[in-house]
Image 1: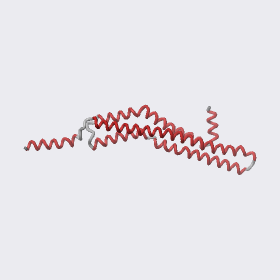
Image 2 (image 1 turned 30 degrees about the vertical axis):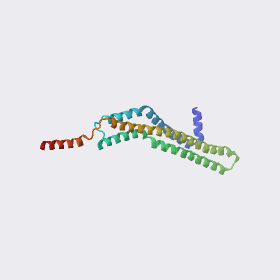
Image 3 (image 1 turned 30 degrees about the horizontal axis):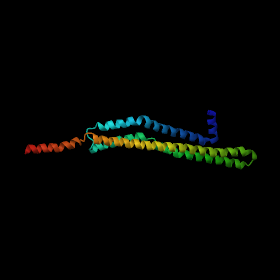
Image 4 (image 1 turned 135 degrees about the horizontal axis):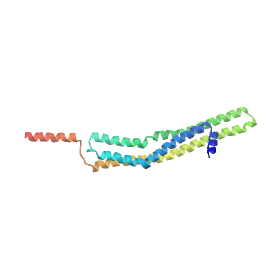
Length: 195
């Protein structure tokens, strides 16, 4: 098995090694995102909800900023790897095209020799060009499809978290900012005393 992998890398040349490393990094990030959605996201969302419900009031400007912070932190945990994954998906075909250029260069160098014994070198150049391009496209497609699934799932989870926080506002105690609520009350008391 290992021998086949090494032979495949040798066919693709140096560009294939770079493509393998990039694909490995991309799939590590994809699997990390999948495992987080499956096993850890619900716990973090519950922690955000608990922190929001424990607040005494939910309607002041300060409370709205706390809610925004909780949603932003949850979004960061969900989506921190998305830009890197997107960059990896975009780079895979580019590296495949780089392998194509390298293969073409090898073909042209063999053609300049112009001997009948160089047919093998010509065939290897064509193989390098086609193999690396195909590998780059396969890696990009696999990452693109998986990323689309993860992005859609993460967006649904984020909307669900925001909805839970909104439900907590409706079901929780509707107490406004204590400082703002206490000021009119003190004013009324003073007025009553003067009366």
